Amino acid sequence: DTGVSQNPRHKITKRGQNVTFRCDPISEHNRLYWYRQTLGQGPEFLTYFQNEAQLEKSRLLSDRFSAERPKGSFSTLEIQRTEQGDSAMYLCASSLGLAGGFIYNEQFFGPGTRLTVL
Amino acid sequence: SQQGEEDPQALSIQEGENATMNCSYKTSINNLQWYRQNSGRGLVHLILIRSNEREKHSGRLRVTLDTSKKSSSLLITASRAADTASYFCATDARRGFGNEKLTFGTGTRLTIIP
Image (tube, rainbow over all chains, first blue to last red; front, side, top):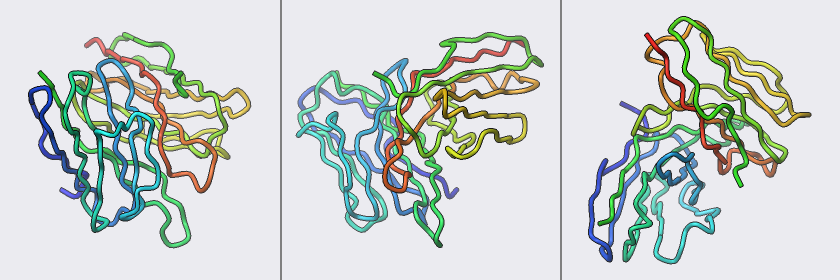
């Protein structure tokens, strides 16, 4: 399967613990995005990468959150000192971006990682 | 506040009927995309319409875009039980080359009654 994959699919942790999620985008996609979705709401943008460069971060991304994409392929999202308010579905998406003189804007999403903080 | 607002919030129809969902947004956009999400799952990309397009079709889906009214509609024809899901519109604000962060609405929950 060549879609976006995310691991783990579910994570239960105790308040104060650190957690790390991984996203593997579609292989030729240059751009990678992280979103967060709470129950009954649409996804909210957290951050995105163009290759290995992190180009924008939302105000939602507090100092406890950090994202990396070290080689421009997979990405990790780490949450330190988790709080109950961090409980949500964390979604990763990728897009081809600028390629061959065209701009491909469709963002394709992974299945998400559901985080529960006790 | 949300950039995109879907209307209605919930919709129930009989199988075989057509379903129409609407989306309004606030700022100028490059593109508008529609997504489907089954309960507890990731989002499935349905269709993208560019700001210079007015209508687009994909199978049983028809999307319209009215940039003067900052609104879009998604029509699903001949609905099936498998169409039961939440539907979201998402916009990327007109800046740069687009393909940047998407802003989602709260979605329309569609239920198809067999």
